[in-house]
Image 1 (cartoon, rainbow, N blue to C red):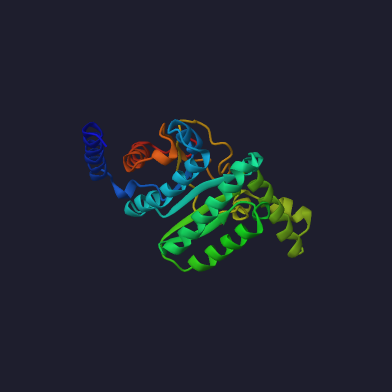
Image 2: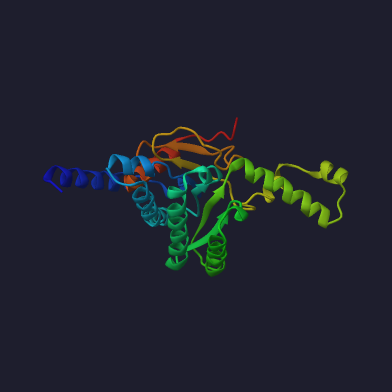
Length: 257
């Protein structure tokens, strides 16, 4: 690292401290959703492999959760693998699944996070299904940030699964279709989503400069604020995170009004 890079790093750290010093923790979002985009483009820019990009993105997760803990965030939803990602070439998908499984094991072993899977479990390999179930059981009693790991997740699929779950529940209870039709409301559907009774995301962060949600938590983000960051996920810094929190605090949330 040359002198210019060292000076730039020092200035960024000083600026981050300044931003953090002016942050009102009462205005920090309680639930943050993260679309961790840009691993492949980061790797290409660095002259490295796609797998290396995914590993670098995975290594960023614990650091990010540490920042969330420092600022009193209570729930974090990390979109690790979409249903669309299963269409990727096998030479990319197989290593990516292994990296994600390692992430889940690491989070569970850390002892600070409560891990919860959101997504369609049946789409995943049997080994990953076991890893997710074991991680949820091992961390169920941890009093820390609730970390939703969205793996095999699609927003439209979640809504379809919620409706299917609601119909199955009604059938189990002997509720007729007419009775269900008369009683169904948005709260009932919400209870059958993957996130159940969790609070909806207050803030959704997407890295890499893309300005779309790509189906992320379609139901739950109706009133969320969005923060789109140009930085690729592996290069996401604490100062970028703090800027997102500052931007969120400065907005007036109108809840669709």
